[in-house]
Length: 188
Image: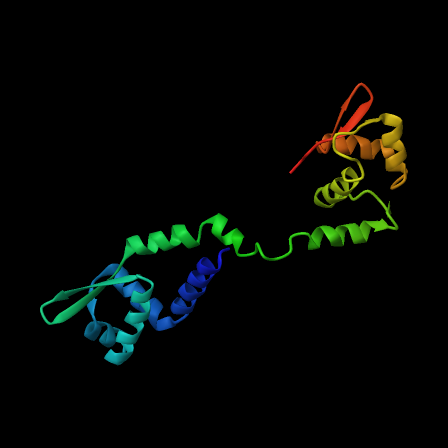
């Protein structure tokens, strides 16, 4: 996630991490209120309510319009929906973790299943098996066609059951086969 978007999200949660502000938003979602009304409803002092409203206005969550000498506040539903679409989309939420190293889990799987470059066993878990198969596929070069006997030799170096590994590499579309010739496929 871009630093600006991350800061917006943090600011949003920081502003809303206050019970009084959440109550103010709840009240303003159903009706317009003045500072005086909000203070009476929430049993707070008017300067405190003004402070909370200013914080909510910083995020454009409330809008104000004057009516005579009184300022009336209400929830800005469009702004709330805009924030929701901008910040809380699945893509944006996923980007919160983009700076976290994604390969740590794969390294752990490889560490658990490999000893000196040999597989202890073929993982039963599909997710772990895919990690192992991708690692095995990397033992083959792109653009090189391998006869089945060479594929078996390379795979046997890592595990005795080369037939299963060969089938799995084809099944998971990490390699292709035609007439006893195998080649690595770009799969990302």
